[in-house]
Image 1 (cartoon, rainbow, N blue to C red):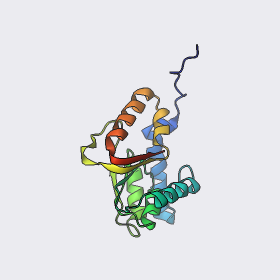
Image 2: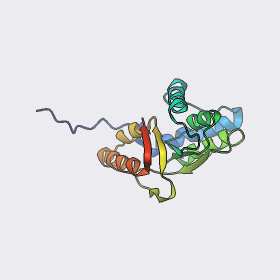
Image 3: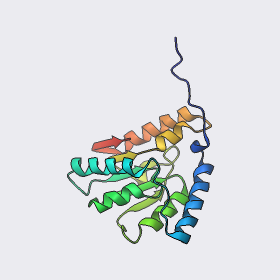
Amino acid sequence: MEDTDTELNSSELGTHTYWQQAYIKEISNFEENGDPGDVWFGEDSAYRVVDWLRRNVEDKNTAVIDLGCGNGYTLSELAREGFTNLLGVDYCEEAVILAEKVSKREFPVIRFKVFDITRDDLSSLGPFGVVHDKGTYDAISLHPEDAKGHRDKYIEQVAAMLDETGDIMF
């Protein structure tokens, strides 16, 4: 019988250090050149999420959280579509700094917070009608230490974030 509990090989993408170094470079690049940085998994992916939410979420004040928000691109696009209750969280403080710098002038309605979904207490966040993640679960799955434990905590936290009407989007 095949072992279904086999873990993925760990990767630097699963480490805080990797993301911290990446966002330090992106902050510097934004400050020097105005470049908001990479849209991880591509703009097309973010566009499909935004389009789906635009068509399926009637109340533009529905609380939306973006887990692992990076530079805040998806949230900026949601704000452009009229969504008003937006929170981006990332466990990398540098990502939050970049997101705030990128969005503050055009989209001051977006809030950002440093939050580690595998360690921090949810009481200051939710509940949310939409929980969005386009890569955080993947990065957690590549963590070099106790990836399964991190994934289990992630799932527990996401389930607890949802309000009674909530949807999870991966």
